[in-house]
Amino acid sequence: MIFLNPPAEGRLVIFSRGDRIAYLEYQASDGCQKDDVVINLATFSVEKHERWRGDTVERRSTLTTRLQPREPPGDGSPTRPLVKLN
Image (cartoon, rainbow, N blue to C red):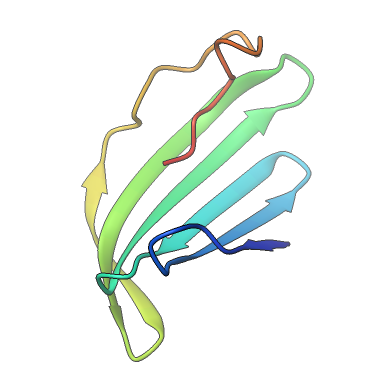
């Protein structure tokens, strides 16, 4: 698990378990966004990418709106990352 302190007084949490990455961003506006990605490590391809948006209430995220991924999966190169989180 990685905790980062992004600008705008938000908080970012990244969980990674082998082939699954969960990215949760708490925003200064009491909003939150989550990306949940499953990567096939054998083929280096994205099997699932779900994005959600919601609110933070009493330090808990309530993810209510499903969003489309920002971009289709890239080829993994520096200019076209396999997945772009938030």
